[in-house]
Image (cartoon, rainbow, N blue to C red; front, top):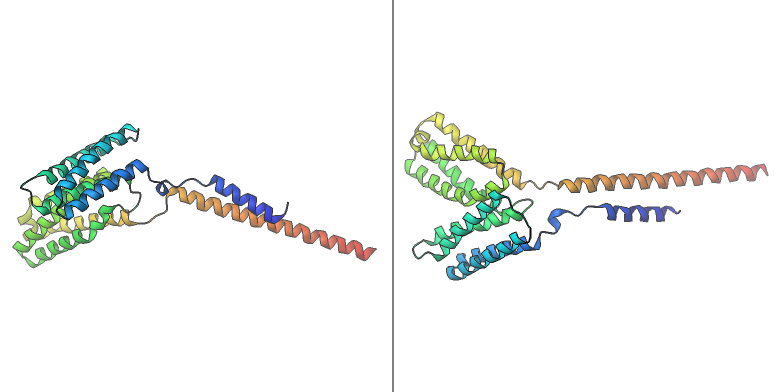
Length: 266
């Protein structure tokens, strides 16, 4: 068999063996839910609360269909989605809630749905900059002894943290969540001590390290484990192909040398 045919055969074999990468084909029904949640958020952004409420009601029906299609969520995920959806629905139907609070509640819901179907870099990681900005403002206020600025930045931080918190519970390990929550609750509960005592300020540095780690871990664009299978398989087949071609060339050269020796003898 000619080397070119061997190469073609091996490449065809590679295509047959290559696994389908999971994130290349997101479950259409889950993607549909993601789109609905995004449309609801866009409606709230432009103050169209009634339209947002209708989208959320539509989501509820679609969500029931999805769960009926045997796409199984964990019990924790079901609770997170249900709670976030109820709060978003309440926000769009309220006659007294301010725009910012409505926006936060529907954004929280939007991030939860995205976290369910995102493989790498879910939307909540985009909140890193505003969260760390107010966190740094809080730290600066502590070091400067600025009581008013400290409380203002801490309140802003807590508000943003609560927006991403349900999504964190989907993507981050329970142990990490528990650790971060303990630090957040400590800083909130012991505000005077954090502002005045150096020992308490250590919690700020620890919380900052925890936050940066979860954002960095989720932002790393690492290859899916199945891709490593593809890389290894591809490399092996290329090596095998080159080895075969080299061996065929060696045999051909050897045969030519034998023929030349025969011709000389004759």
